[in-house]
Image (cartoon, rainbow, N blue to C red):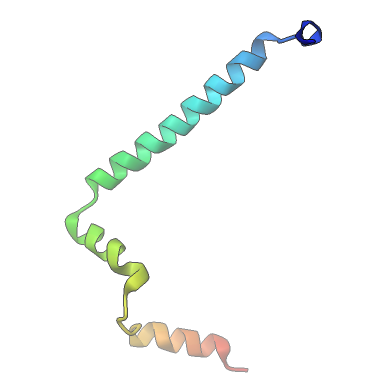
Length: 68
C-alpha cells in the first residue's frame, strides 16, 4: 500500500522548518516575558480583571465616537 507513496526530499524538510519557526517564536516570547519590568508584568497580569474606571480622556474619546 505504501509502495506507491513517493516522498520527496522537501517533504521531510518542511516539518523541520515549521518546528524551527515555532521554536523560535516560543523562545522569543519567553525571552521578552523574562526581560519585562516587574511593573509591566503586574499591569498585564491585572488587565483582564481590572475594575478601575477608564481615564477621562479615554471616556471622552469613546463618547465622541458613539454620538451621532
